[in-house]
Image (cartoon, rainbow, N blue to C red):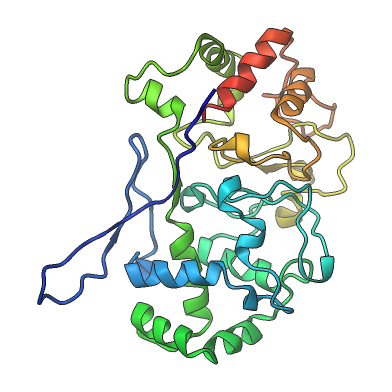
Amino acid sequence: MNKWIFIVIAGVFVACQKGEIKDDTFVLDYPQGFPTMDIPSDNQLTKSRVNLGKKLFYETRLSEDSTVSCASCHVQQLGFAENKVLSAGVHGNTGFRNTPTLTNIGYAELFFMDGGVPTLELQVLAPISNPDEMNLEIPDAVNRMKAIPEYQKMAQEAYGRDFDAFVLTRAIAAYERTLISGNSPYDQHFLQGKNVLNASELNGYQLFVDKGCVNCHSGFNFTDNDFHNVGLYLNYTDIGRKRVTTLDADEGKFKTPTLRNVELTAPYMHDGSLATLEDVVEFLNTGGEAHPNKSTFIQPMNLTSQEKTDLVNFLRSL
């Protein structure tokens, strides 16, 4: 199916008439069916903040050897994810988790797959300082940017202060909040009344509901923002949410990812161990491993070959 993936840097810059003071207002352009995003009072969106954040997002000098940026792993054409099992950081180092999508990240409630960071602003710090990613201490990152006149000028315009860690975190978070994706074939069919989904996709939608996928992948963003163990392994080397809470009951639990643009974000699961959507559906169809923390929502689905195809086709419409 020829599909238009609606990945946008969403926003409307409010214009001003000649002779007026320049209006720096940035208004998010919400797709139909999307709620208003909660934005911190100290980081309301402006054109200058979003522009600075975008520049920093693509800035390789935020890494130790100036080879890696946020955009190295969060590729716009791939739904702000990456098509590798594990991403390569500086010196060819790799992390231990698959790169998550940043699609609609401004709606998330906790960040990283284990929910270890409470705000989008604080999330910015981790990949920059992580030895397996960008490997640059935050004071060093700030000093690098502060020494560049263009960044000093942009920091003053955006936040009225010299470039510092506050500016670094707020600006990148401001840009990331504009990464909104909607108006997919699913939205056009169910929200706009356009008859764009075919019989296979519609049957896949019904299976998505009837087989309980919607229990976790719910709402406009197809996520409950909660943590679940889906029985991917009987023994987890990455303990997931337990790293944060230390609770045995949270071992193997990971945050439910959005399914928006899921066709673009392969491979899948927290470790990138499932290469295709077909592999994911095949795994979930079995009901997973008998881990003691496995969600009760994960049960054998007993799908036929055609039903598996239909479910995958529906997922591709998101």
